[in-house]
Image (cartoon, rainbow, N blue to C red; front, side):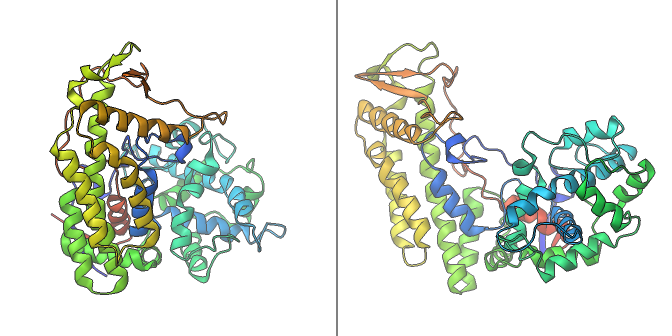
Length: 451
């Protein structure tokens, strides 16, 4: 499939930088920044649209790296395999990831590569890799991230591997497609002998010659895939039917950004495809627009309350002039309700349930007719959201703002020194991963860059 787009000036080769939003949790609800409980509906919508993509899956050659590691692991006689061995197999790949990353880092430093060079742009744990390379590391025995298993490449890209039918999710076994991709990577020129690579999986103390790592890094780095390998990567990325439909619609509608205008075009383009899955995706994209508009306005009102005091003193509800209700909130709430009703037939059940639950929870806020009513509803909702989260010690998380009779108390930690500025009408509070998806399509050679 040929997909075309204009090249981004802010990201080399058109690849997006990671989109970090204050309201896009990167882990679980208990540890997220999600003061109004939008995580569940956002996750339901985003994972339905692009089930194998996250906001940090940006470099598609990680799929080759991991498949190659699994292939080498299968050549070790006592390696875990079969049944429910997936978790143990992932753990065995961490030394492999560090080794390939080290070769990449050595190559990039030798070439004087800048931070955004294709060789190591968005390499997981790049700071650790750069330090290890500069300190003369010649093995995988160096630290990479505090939680490499969860935040490194293996944990980050596992969902993409499974969605692309490269790996079996439970057993962690390579599929025939994954085997082909692994061989495409391992058979590149200057790859160290397989026996030495398998020994490196068994012991991270296995050392290599620096020149050997440099030569390997020249072809193994994140930007080094050749056309044959890129073809396998493209097939995997477009394997999920939702991915294929989204790629087609994104091209037709020139929709490559998480913002309202782009998603309106995307919804229309998906609907034009005419099949049931595309219809469901079109419904999701349409609901995203209304959901984001309401969430954005509620966050703006919430931030107005946060800006009312910075010294942990109680503030009278009557003094919160900035949080006065108006017709805008009511219109946005009713627009989301209308969108859910309009698209009820096509919207997947779990998505409809998650969005309707959010709408019901915030309805007292967007229907409030007085300043005190709006503050009570919004802060009360926030307190309920926070009570459902737990900190590292498994204690309920404290609210940012608390109700105390006719007063509110704003925690100094979360108080805003200045009143918030209203975002543009098309702005979203969450990134819906289409930027990352388009970037990986481009790397795989199926998104044509022009201009």
